[in-house]
Length: 274
Length: 274
Image (cartoon, rainbow over all chains, first blue to last red; front, side, top):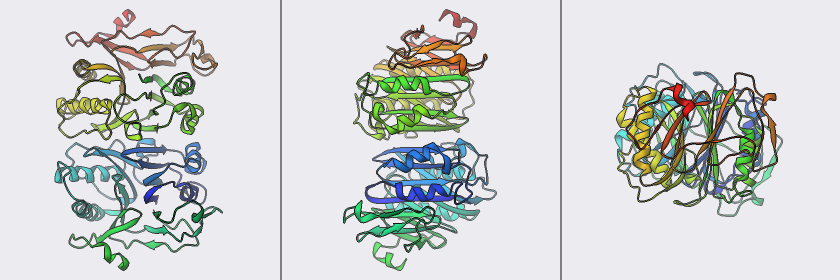
């Protein structure tokens, strides 16, 4: 079982605190030693750091831990290999371009017998079910919206259908972002927290590190952190109910719908039902 | 004028020595302060480090300088912006996937009035002429070889035609790799050196650093380094004649032909004429 970490914010924010606890799961407090990666959107650009070595003792992870890169959308992954050898080409997150935007994807789970028909426009480089699923998602989006002239509700609905279809083949927790929204699909385990004023003093579950976010934020900042399991042990994290695809924007979930029902969008005011 | 650096080897080799001199040109010994990047192929995978800040004082460059990543094909770039703002989305090298392989591209020069018709399969994320040229190249390759079932001579010939066509609009020095070969096109300035046994004691031109390659290599190693201008001051670098596209494989140029003549491939035995 891999570990996912995502962050979506309303102002560019660094992920150093959360990453400190997350990286410890790559060989220190947990056994995910088969590589790790993290991708930061900065404007339209993406910076990805990938390492097929365990994150707990990676010099690249050490850099990411201490180098504050400010981003609106971040996706990170620590790998416990199920399908595909340990190697850079199988290290998440994966990156492609569609409609003149970069897309980033990371997956936790295992898809059995997944062999979708692909047009050839997006092809896996490695041998994971995860990269294949990512290529399948983009292939279908490109066919459905050839010019990229869709609104966010249409995109969310299309992704929900794809999550439902692919998720029928096994465990399919994933994080996906085009730099605008961060989509989080839960099929078994995925939770999130929204931090906003008054900010908490948070303590990591995996390392003895505490941060008082009031010291490093402004009152209007809002940050959503999404993870496989809670990263802090003194805050209340919200489980995403299995079968749901959440879209995060400006540091909070903006719409949700069950992937197991007919596609429909829920207005933002219903979010208190989550 | 940007700076290009490429490396192609017959065994996975680190680029720490060459990068030490190269990075100094990003704000220390030269004035290219508008970002830098480096991409390493490792197997089928790619690790790219991109930074919109000057390389001379970049923590990421400090990591790359001292962290030996072993690769058969490396492309690096230091930017002096001509078209496109300074920003991550305009930082070279650029990356895309075609035929289930990653492709990496970096450009030195300036293309004027370049507005190719693109199918939409590959679209620029940023606003540089360079990324547009890269998308144009891949778009044309994808149309010409839809299934990727071509041999290396056909690929080389197709790239040579594209280099000729696009290079007609301005300065078009570039490095391009699919992880198998490293293509180097010179329209004005690009040179290379092939290091093999007996290895030299090399001294950087931009920093007072010396390496005796006999201490860090085996007799069968062969490494080609390609750069805008020579990186060492005590070795004989070979200029690539303007108008030529060289393909490097296993640490040496394997074929060459003028982009300004009818497409034809030169057999490997003629390389001593270079």
